[in-house]
Length: 397
Length: 74
Image 1 (cartoon, rainbow over the protein chains, first blue to last red):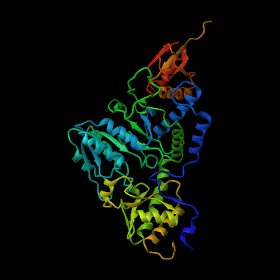
Image 2 (cartoon, each protein chain N blue to C red):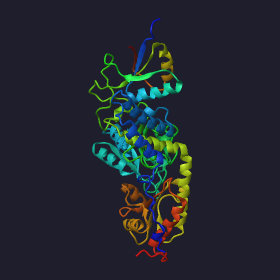
Image 3 (tube, helix red, strand yellow):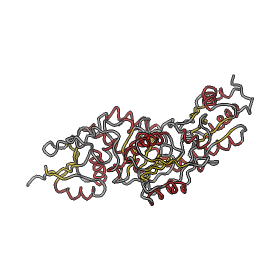
């Protein structure tokens, strides 16, 4: 029987782009907001407005719990991790400042930094090893007297490589450098503690491992630093309405305009799911799936796998290539013939692909999630084996 | 007997008032969020009303956990 006929439903392996499915409670929370609340938070004192505000506050509180942050008001909501990173980078860096980053960054970090470079900010991009790891000693060597900021991804969206964040945090703190972490790939799937890791800014995505809807994300700002970061947008905050100047306190300084309350209702529910399941349990399941997949790939010929060899040093992301077929062609075949959904190409991280030697053709990226099942790995491996020309048992034409 | 007078805690923004509300609910301290009275401030937000005899209790609960701007007698 053709393999594609064995699978009458899709196999979703694009969780590194956005998680799917979401916990049932996520949509229920959004429907509840829409049907039972519906007010604009912080914009009046009536009960529906206050209830909307409570929805957002609850989302802040569970996120603060997840990140080991004492004060939930240190978290400002944004529409995604990219906006959070832009606030941090554009807001803190001034002409003449020096900033250090890694060669594994996503464009959400690299593009703002390259723009800031044109405005007089000095940028050092520290090369990572071929499997994407940043050596802390190389960061120390890059520090200059006027280094203001170190910005590093917690884990690469291309290879899943987990960076030594706690060690980098200690280095930054010891040198009086502000430490910004891009947790788009790790918030909800790896333990994060802003105090233990000495993180000053934590940018996170709401719609990946936090199981919120798209259009949600946020930025944690260590106490006092908000005085130094310019907001990206200014406008109505519902507070200090008598003044024409933007409030200078968290989270209002970075939350102008009516927020995505319905989305944050969903995000709050997603984070509650993460807390209930436990980050360790989520990590354990994802690591098991990744281990299984990596072992399966190792048994195939014609496959090149990128990133750390074992699942322990990466998130549930595996980038690979199949000899004789381009990533985009492979992804199309996987989708159309086998119902396997993944992401080919450069993954908005050209510098990361240069680091691992896959620029400009890119890789095929599988991103596993907590809701993937062990039994989905085997059909995927068979499909890859077929595309690699190693198995003619299955007919796809 | 003289009626108990009300006071309001004013916060930097609604987010702070809602956090204070959560803390006081957990502590079982009587309070109510109300729109900021016009004669106190032209702010469009809310403040936290309680009775005058609860001022120290409320302040004690909130101290170090959520900032407030000032306390005003209604």
